[in-house]
Length: 302
Figure 1 (cartoon, rainbow, N blue to C red):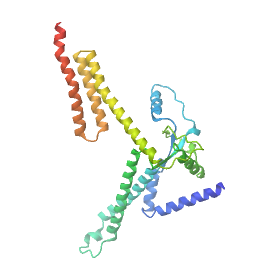
Figure 2 (tube, rainbow, N blue to C red):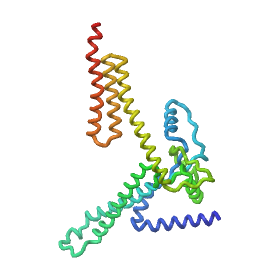
Figure 3 (cartoon, rainbow, N blue to C red):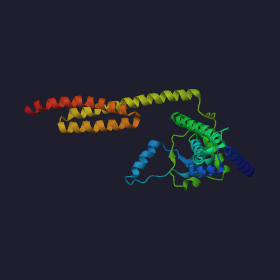
């Protein structure tokens, strides 16, 4: 039974490969495949990202971390990497066509085009295909901002894990075959813990769950930003009030404004927004520094 399933698996793979060659030349597909195939499948770990961060931080202090057992690791297939492979194959064909058009002496010497040359027709078709591929990739990139990324299949999801285990079993590969590549597993915890008696979670999740997740994520984001903004304002205020030393206060203000500006540079896209936000924050802190400068002479005379 297993051998017949494996034969069907191989046949389906061959049919897929044959159909995809219609959009790019075999030579371009070969080059694109060799550049991208390593990133198609990676290992994932049930550890949380924050947990993995502290473990990595501990290695800097020579704290030995216990690796996740191999039987607890899972797989992830990245469909976006397939799209990148497809775009690379199309790009290689476009590069070759661009060079061909550049040195097409027949078209250059022909002063009266009765019909569009085949190379121009080919360019028109290939450009449309490539542009659509780029648009599709942009759509796939936007999907990463959603709760449920439809362009990955990962073992952190119960049903994805079932199909991934089946696919790797049919290919006669496993966790060890990916582990020997030397790439650390991605921390993707927490994983779904759906029991066998429960209904499988549908692909993309239910609508109610998605809405609740978006509301919850927005609330958490607003609370985090409120706490962060309060910390940036109240923290320096306490330091400026507790130790009324001009040099110390100027140093505290400088460090706080610098950190705040760097944070805005990572979060915001436009330079004018970063500049305006940093100036506004610096102006608020300078009010307190100005008050301290005014009080410093009176406190020293008394």
